[in-house]
Image: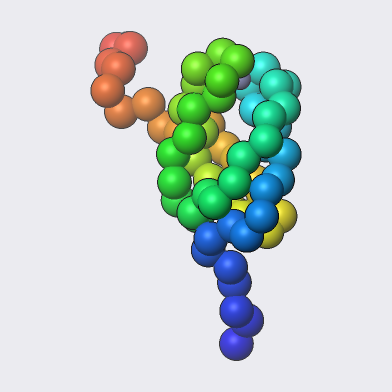
Length: 65
Ligand SMILES: [Zn+2]
């Protein structure tokens, strides 16, 4: 069994996969949605140790086909 942290301790530097902005974050929880202060994109916290962010799926906007 591996104990996987689901909540951050201390602070870490988040990097936006969309625009490359870096900023300090703290107390994030795995699965939480945060917003990039630079481009405003929504990011899902995939992992907290190490911190890993991924673009959150857009469910409100329907781009159609
Ligand atoms: Zn960004």
